[in-house]
Length: 262
Image 1 (cartoon, rainbow, N blue to C red):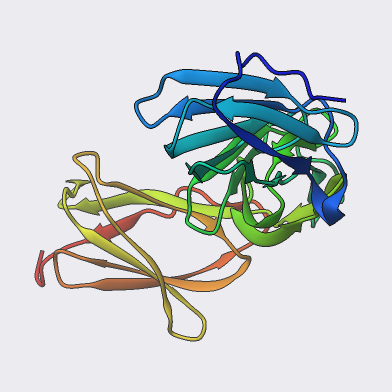
Image 2 (cartoon, helix red, strand yellow):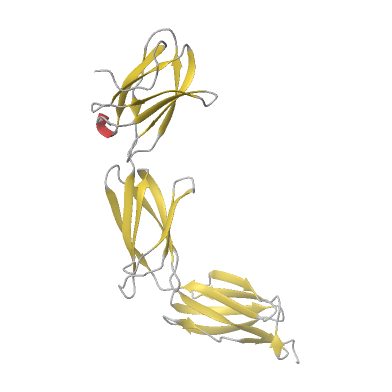
């Protein structure tokens, strides 16, 4: 039988099959022929075996667009001469990604976490918030390598690579570590010190983070692991103070600076 087509005929036939993964036929795919200027010239719907057919008005280059539920749309350039053209269209299926965000420390789900999916170029494919049980779901992702980045209040941000499967839903479990916070005020001569530089150094001597105080002299470091740190403030002769960060962090770790003799 001849595939359904909206073309009036009389031109050069363009025939072929719409196929998915492993050459499986894709029925009920919409196939549209447009001119390079964007005008629609014909439209067909693929049959049960994936066959489609339409007519190009004459020799030249055209764009063939195919789309179907559950597949990424595909646009192709077709060069038509005087002879009928056989052109098969391969569609890539879309896949799903779902998972759950949990706390590594408490083993409890983390609701309200921001989940961001990006492709290998860094373009954002999907974003969403985890639900009450830490769950999230994204549909219609292109199969392949993606990066899943997760941020949540009170936890360290995390990014991990995920391979989205060609069919079905890929499931991941994401564990976030609790992030401690160190905050305080840098003071000088009894008042807050603006534009002081505060450096956080870990027990191995590595600089973990730096901050500059505002007009209120305040500084803050977030997303920290538990452990021993040294906080160094400069702007006057530097002062180094030691502190131990536990699970919740350290608040009110104020620093007083003064010139010698003050």
